[in-house]
Length: 158
Length: 179
Image (cartoon, rainbow over all chains, first blue to last red; front, side, top):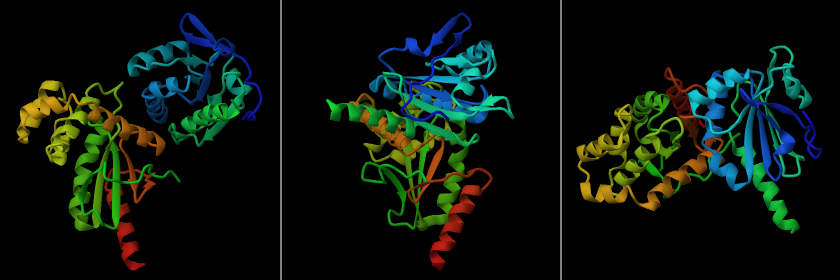
C-alpha cells in the first residue's frame, strides 16, 4: 500500500454511466477510499451497507466515502439501485484495476481489488490506511478514529 | 481484538442474571432476516444456560435497507418505559415482516401497553437519541453487520448458526468452571 504522508495520486473514473469523478476535484473535503473485491459478494455487501448508514458521521467530519472496484459502471448502477447506496461507486474497469495498482491494492491472482481503506485529508495527503483480510469486513471504527484524529490535530495546531 | 465500547451499563436492557459468568451482547436490527434467525437461537441459549447467562440487546438499525427498523427500535424503547422491553422485543422479532406503524401499535397493545402513553413516548427525542447512541456504540465497537455478538466484552468472530454460538458459550462456561 502507499505510505502515509504522501499526496494521494490523482485519478478519474466513471461514477455513473455518463459521469466521471476526479479525486482532485473533491477540494476542501476529506475522502475515504474503500477498495473492495466485487459488487454483490456477501462481505462487500455488508461492508458497503454499513458505510451507507454512516453518511451523518462522514458529513460531521467533512468527509466523502467512495467505493472502488473493478466492476463496470453498469454493475455499479444496478448494485447502487438495489441497495439504495447514497455514495458513489467508481468503476476501475478500463484499463482494469489501474487505480487499484496505483494504490498498491490490486490482487493479480483474482483480478480484483484487495479490501483496503485509505483516509485522505482536505489537502489530499494520505493520513491513514488499512488492508483487511479479504474475507473480513473491516467495519468503520478505524475510519472514524482516523477522521477524528485529523480533526483533533487541527484543533491543537490552531 | 475488538472490544465492546462502552461496556454494559445502566442504559442497557439486561435479561437474565446480571452477575452471570457469561455476558452475551447482541447488536441487532429488528427488520434484518439474519437477526430474525438469531432470535430463537438466542432464546435457546438463554434457556440452556439459565442463571449462567446475562443477555443484552443493543439497537443497530440499518435504516437505509430496512425502512421500519428504526421505528421498531423506538417502539421497544417506548415499551421499556412501561417495563416491557423484552416482551416488545420478542413480539417485534416474531413479526419482523410486518413492522409498519399500524402493526407496531397493535403489537404494543397486544402486550398490554398503555396506548396513550405509548403514542406519546414514541415521539420522544430521548428515545431517538437512545437508539442512535446504541448505533454509535456499535460503530465504535467494530460492528460490521447484523447480528454482531460480543461475549464478555470481546467481539465474537465465528459463525453463530447451527448451534455454534451455543457450543461456544457452553465451552466457555466449562472452561471457567474448571479454572
